[in-house]
Image (tube, rainbow, N blue to C red; front, top):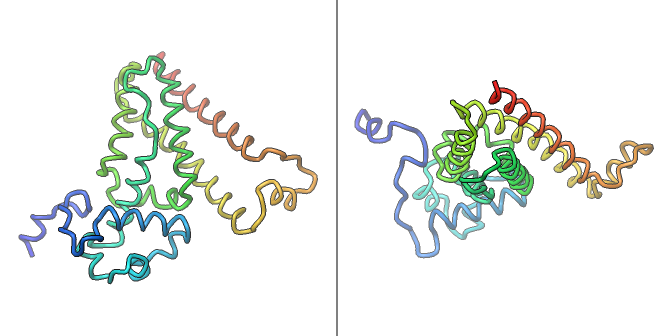
Length: 224
């Protein structure tokens, strides 16, 4: 037992080498892609190794050769989705514009996958994933070049805002989708006197405003 603990000191999929494919069509990449498709279609509550195995025409035992736990599967799925975030150039001359672009892309990515926000903050050691690491490293480069002596606080502030807002927004959009109505029709039913001809535009404006406030605060600290 002691030898096993020493061989795997960190309980994360990122520190364990992938298993060899159990069959030609089954690999970790295939499993993760199908996991994301299942999560997008059915939500996180529907995910199980048994159902995933059925979708892949493979037994749960075959899946466990590639991912030891369901939590590991979620780590992989989260990091794979984060690869969709568009990273600004590391040498961007305007740090605020670059961070804004990254934050907007982060929000768009999570809204395409509504299950993401519910697990991003509790996906085990997800920060070990290469794609989230790439996002954090790019933010670190941008904030360091801007003059922040310790960029981690600024990175945490941006993450907290984006994840916090998109968590609420994803929950709202999931509720709208379950109603079978458009967002505008759903709002009209809830508040007949309200005028929301462009609810998506309103959500975009609210996100942009809040992000500007966060960046304004960071700029003030930088100017000190």
